[in-house]
Every structure is written in C-alpha cells, then in structure tokens.
Image (cartoon, rainbow, N blue to C red; front, side, top):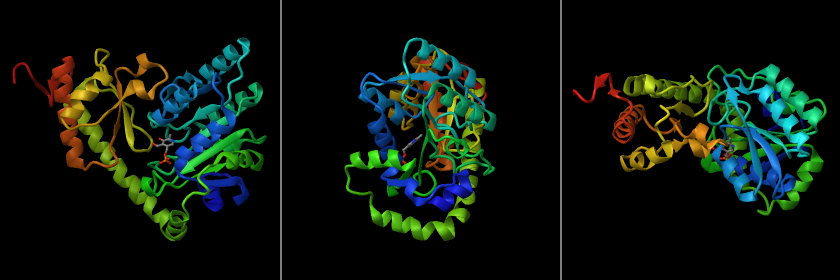
Amino acid sequence: MARKLERTAGICCDAGEILITSGSLQGLDLVNGILLTRGDTVIIEQATYQGALTRLQRLGVEAVGIPLDRDGMCMDALASALDDLKRRGVRPKYIYTVSTVQNPTGTILSEPRRHEMLRLAAQYGVPIFEDDCYSDLIWDGRRPPALYAMSQHGGVIHIGSFSKSVAPALRVGYIVAPWPLLARMLAIKADAGSGALEQMVLGEFCPRHFDVHIPVLTQALRVKLETLMEALNEQFGTAAEFEDPKGGIFLWVKLPDQVDTQKLFVPALAAGVAINPGAEWSTDKNHGKSRTRLCFANPSHAAIREGVATLAEVCRREFGVPARIANMERARA
Ligand SMILES: Cc1ncc(COP(=O)(O)O)c(C=O)c1O
C-alpha cells in the first residue's frame, strides 16, 4: 500500500500511517467517529457523495456546501465560508473533499487550488478530510499529488478504496493519517479487524496485475461514458447539460428547471431505469432538484442507450421535456 500510494498519489508514508478498513465507508465512519459530535459544523462540496451527507445528517452535524466548477471546489467560496463561520464563532471540524474525480461532478481539484485549500485550512486551523476513492479511474492517468502529499504540516486525513478499481464486494479500503489519529480510530474500530482473505487476494493480485488492469478498466469506462453522452445528446438534445468528466463512473446531468429528479425517480424506476436524484447528492436541495447522477459503469452499451431513451420518454411524459426526442417532435410523431 505504501508503495502504491507513493507511486500514484505522491504520498510518502510507511505502513504505520496506514489503517486497512472495511471499505472507505468504514474510513468515513472512523474519521467522523473521532472528530464529530452532535451540533458540529463541517465544510463539504455542494454536490457530494450521498453516503457522506446522510452520515452527517444522522450525526446531527451541519454541512456547509461550497460550490464547484470545472476545477473542483471554488476557493473564493471556501475562503468566504471559513471567514463567515469564524465571525460567528464556529470552527468547522473538517473540510471534506473528493478532490480527485469528484463524486458526482467528475472534476479534479487543480494543483493551484490544492495549494490554496491547504493554505486556507492552515490559516483557519481546520483539518482537510480527503476522500480519494476514484483517483485510479482517470482517463489520461494524470493527477495532481494528493493533498496529503502536498501538506507540509500535517492536517490532512486521506482515505481510499479498492472498491472502484478492483471490486466493491471486496470491502477493502484504507486510511492514511498520523499515528496519534489512527490510534484513536483503532480504539473505536469495533470489528476486530477487516477481513484478511480479501487483503491476501489483493496482495497477490496487485503487484502483477493492478497496473495492467487499470488502463483496460478506464478505457472501457471511457467508451461507456461516450455512449452515455451520445445517447443523452440524441435523446435529450439541449435539455440535458453536462461537462465531460475527467474520470470515474458517473455523469452529473442538469435537466431543465421544471424537472424535479426526485419526482422523476419513481416513474423512471417503474420503467426500469434507476437514477440518483440530485437533491440527495447536494447540500442545497434547490441546486440539486433538476440534476441527476447517472452511473454508467455496470450497464452494457445497449442497456445505456435503451435506458436513456426510456428516461427521455418518461421525463417528457411527466415534465414535458425534452420536447423533441431522438430529434423528432413527439406531438407530430
Ligand atoms: C466518495 C465516496 N467515498 C466513499 C465511498 C464508499 O466506498 P467503499 O466503502 O466501497 O470503499 C463511495 C462509494 O460510492 C464514494 O463515492
């Protein structure tokens, strides 16, 4: 693990700074477990991983959302949120960021922004919680160093996973943090150790196969993404807006304002298409309302095309958009 982290994320650490977890979800729980209590505040990307949001809700922690653009979390918005909280006497417990292939936007936090985030975090005395679980799935394989690697004075906790690169059912993730923090996490890690067999499987698979497997996987994912984007353009036309993500397994799609994806979810599912309603993946429910996260990793190319056609049909029936489907005006067709 230590060698992989150095090679791929630029993190120089030894095995003593790494704790193997049962998926990175357990990493989230352990970090939350040592840092958060009810009534706390954290800073988080405005569109973010639903599993992180629901955990914060359950813990009674307020999540302050920071908008993203093509280069990830916007640093001017982060600076004003930190300033605003400080003026109100609130010190957030951490800044949570899925910095490298963000969930759900697929953006990568640029290197200058990483420097700025580290500077702001040090200035306001707030740790950074870096969730790097998609960072192996980048189309061109190029990524900035992890925030953990760039930090000169500590203050960053890094988590990752083999769920996205090898198999989610293995449940092997990891936390990289200084030992005093890991020691506190170990004290609340109640499962008496994460499964050893899975780790042995990875220990055998990775040295010989990981570097061969990753380009094959990312190439296959990229082609599926192209199928999805083509199908959306064909079926939704200008009604579906999205940026071409830099990696990952999902596309963050903006539909016209009148579409409520939480309401679209039910009839779409009844027609056989599962979507992630944007409000569930956003700190700002209004921002998420007409957005949806579409995951393209598992379905075949044919299923992607068929699914998008069905989704367009259901969306037109429920919300009147797209007015044209597959370039045909439905009223006249
Ligand atoms: C940003 C993020 N973090 C953590 C996880 C948890 O993954 P796992 O527990 O399978 O490693 C996910 C899964 O979707 C995720 O998207």
